[in-house]
Image 1 (cartoon, rainbow, N blue to C red):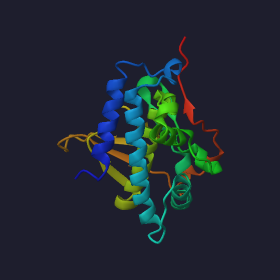
Image 2 (cartoon, one colour):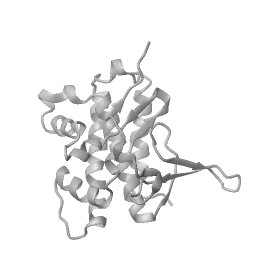
Image 3 (spheres, rainbow, N blue to C red):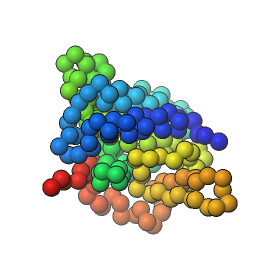
Length: 212
């Protein structure tokens, strides 16, 4: 079974992988902008909008959210630790926390850039950057994992495996008794001892490898 939304996420991630052949994912290039990064930013953030509404509907069926601040209020009520979720890009020694702004009730800058590129592309196209495309895609991954946590339970099985972005709590089962590898994530829970101190950590929205 392939959970809803997952195939679309995988397709977006593949677009990022292709883009990495032309623009290296380094701190020097993080503000590089292009049509391809605009397309990835728009696709990821638009899907964040769709998936967030679905997650909100499960957490609070009576709510009628229609903007990002509404999503924040509902989702962080259901998952208080979601803002602290980190996503790693091991290939480039890069770490992202796309929702960390939510701990201070702030809208992520990449979301504002998404709206600027979407509605004011003629003057704000320069915001269609590598860093915003990456954060939007990572943000989508985080929302999807929490959505699946709510729908399917603590252990989420997803196929095909992601190739670029890896969440903090990643477990892969490659048992020889299975036809193919399966991917599982453990989603942070308020009463899980291994996550009790997560709010005390100094988590940065982005951490790039420093090139020599």
